[in-house]
Length: 192
Picture (cartoon, rainbow, N blue to C red):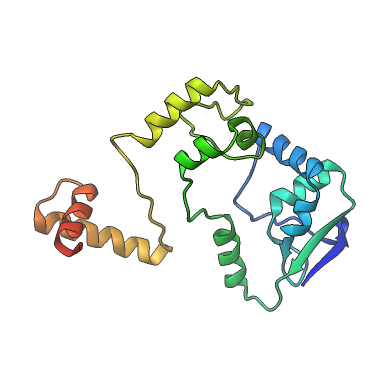
């Protein structure tokens, strides 16, 4: 259940591995000032001791914006392991943007102002991007149509070690050069 509390009642989580710095943090502060209702619609998640599990950066930005109260949801009865898992999963991005829709249906300046990370091939992370629609469209096309793409897989520590061993076993057994070839082999062998 969402409730409104004085900002001093909640505590920053010092072990949260996600940070926002520089102009991106400034944009977050600005977005909270410009659209404070967002803090109610997306409350900060805290544990039984009011330590933040989700929303550390929004909390910092709310402090910077001068808010006295914030909305929270208290996640009760989570084990320490579940709290750790929540922190990571809350900060993981499982989906991906459809860049064609974004480029055709949204204003690029608004997307940037709202905090969307536009392709890094064009923007300098330490500075506010200067948006030139023609350059952006060209760079976006290059990004979307790149000949080399990347797949990122996430494992817990134990599964990661096993996956690395299994990939090496398949590489050796099938005389393959790298893990890309292993994945192609597995897709060819088991794919639909």
